[in-house]
Image 1 (tube, one colour):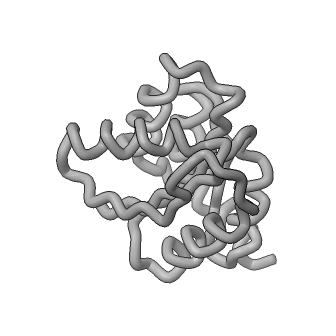
Image 2: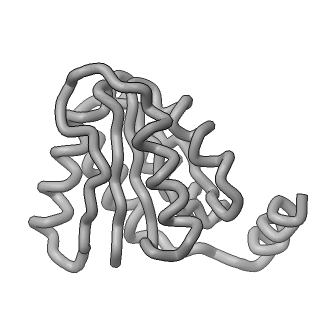
Length: 144
């Protein structure tokens, strides 16, 4: 699975943890769009390109990070074809995939305990979309 990942300065540390985790698991081709430090940057500069790449189909999924994940999700969801959800628990990640077919995961480093980070990512990547009534709802969203 091809994954693109990006973060602002407030999500940098967790971004690095996720990259290491996915590379250790194997089966993931991870491309990092930055940032490369905790030096402050404006998150749309990194997040918008991640969303555009997922929407264009060049990557299967994207993972974006910031302090809360909220601003990052707002930027990503401005790109047609993106379904980005902010997740804060394993259950929210599972439902984001099952019910929303989320193709970008947004995480807040300041809000998620480090022990919960990798389980959230792992579940989000492993969970399939349920389809059915949920597909009908996504079609309605896309029609707007």
